[in-house]
Image (cartoon, rainbow, N blue to C red; front, side, top):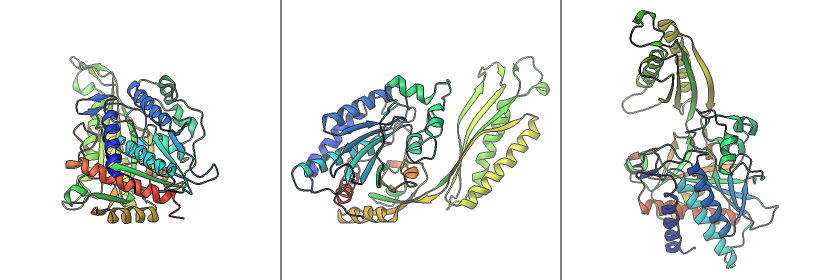
Length: 418
């Protein structure tokens, strides 16, 4: 067994240091491809180099730190998460999984070098590009390219609200790589829960066995620019009014489906782009970014149908054209049962109360599940808070996840799970 006190100490030191990059209040703000993202990437690569990892940066900017334990032909165990954040986001979301993976891998490397472990698989740590999707849509972009869910060409061509492409953003921070990404046989991701269930039920480790499906839609209402003063109300073609009707209608969809004790459908509109975005001008266009989420495919299909009816209703009421500019579907699914079983067994062996959970949020482990055995392990989020500077996980829970991850990786590198 690794020296856990030293492992925990090194983890906390590295984790605290990671929060200095893009620090914003109690949290961080380092959206993908920003200077802040570039700085934390530089720091991470320097750490990998200094600790004997072979660094690979692929064309979508994913960073891999490889430990070639068992030779070039050996299978690869991949572990990590993401260092990008939401604007004014928390310091735990994503970064926890990357730092824990790095320190776990370093501890296993020390055992190998001491002759205490004879690995049969190689071990690799990863930082995925644009997991959050805050600046560039879709989210899970780097892992999506890795898994073949989106082509590299399409991913690099995605632009932000200012017209800057992913390709340009990666070039600007020096992470438009050319390396060949290693192909994983198994993937283990550690993350904070970003939900309240573990805390509410007094559990320390969540073994994520399935994920919710999601539909993400970009919708634009087009009107006509006019003066907000002298233009008569009856003549106004207010695009933002139409968008407002969509926003309330999308919320009503969830309220009409969910019961007080069972929530089967989540809906949201998290972003609005208005042109010309002046307080004295009737908007000529308004674009909203909407989401529908459910584990039940029938519920999600019904929600999509209701949304399309809503678009027609808004068109009829406002007399304005309403178009769908972008539409993507992520099907609900299940993580690998053998890896989930391993996570459960390791948690129990360590004396940590465990719980089988589902993730409603998207994580890089989801696209990875289509190309290799994949699992997501989570630790409690105080108050269920996430994507907020006040998100927090207690030190003892961070360490519990770290130790479970380390034990899982050691067993997998040693050959377990064939």
